[in-house]
Length: 461
Ligand code: FES
Ligand SMILES: [Fe+2]
View 1: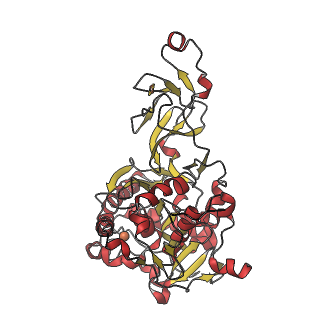
View 2: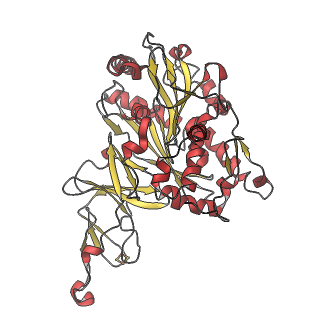
View 3: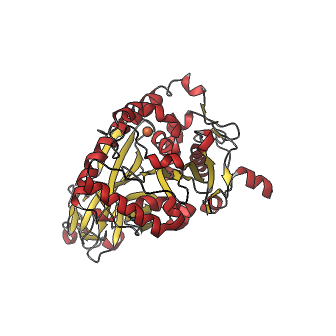
């Protein structure tokens, strides 16, 4: 059982009964340190895309929380994730972003490791160690579990963590909208270009909650909407078909994952978008027709933005992209962003999307810049002695979520807020912080697995 704490995280900082959350969880150094232990050392984290390491010996740098890791494919073709730190004295054994190698040779004293993590070379092994060092005990530190899901690579440091598919739970169907082909085929994505990496001066939870479904902040993107840089070429970033759809906030309560989506009525014509370029236009129209045929009711769902707890976010549609919010101290986040396209898409489509993606997202993207400006100033303005006394409000739309939500014969997994009338809600954000508090309080996966929402828990007791 958890014991009462006087330092670090204290229950009550996330008060979902009142919809108030203390600013301490964003700016307090002790709480931040505890997050590293309780969240980032236990949860499944997104590490990269298989397309970054297609061949034996390929490697790509990544991060898990604050730790640098190496994603590699060994000579036998198996995928590994290792701590990027030499066992001898901690030097970073791989200082490149990506490449192909047979060994990682530590620059400090020269220990070398195979792409399967084994210590294969120790300078002066016979003379200095008298051949006594047990090399089998000094391989690179490897994650406890790794899982490749539809070309994406995930890992956890915790042996007790449930398999990734259980960790995702009912959220997998929503996540798949980012990882499956535009034509509804299984998987098949590739990373377009490299991984964008940059720093934002805010706590990692600012972007995490924004991508959980903060649809209230549209005012921030007013200028982008007016410019009309979207792939439809119209003044709105949305497609006209969406006027007929239900806009939904969807959360998986026992998992902490959430997304926003449009659900189309069962009979709605496939739009003729992307008018600026006929190759692109034809490609997407045909892909969308095929998706709706193949996927049935799921083909009526147009997923927008979402978050896998704790720190992986996606935009499922346009731009199709994955971000990870790597914590770097309480006051800084290192953002990594991957851009996805269907591997089978024509070169012209990929080129068109490359232009659009970087115009929208990333450090130079117009939409992402709007967001970062907010997080940057909100964080800085929340750090002071006086500011920290006042909680944030997450009271929007409390009690309006629906279980077993169904429209025109499609019942959606999770709890749903239908925004057709309400316009906005903070349901998804509360879901993120509910899970955050559970991770901070629970000492074991057994406890985390049996968490239920307060109403259910109360009814069961
Ligand atoms: S730190 Fe790597 S060989 Fe010494
Ligand atoms: Fe935004």
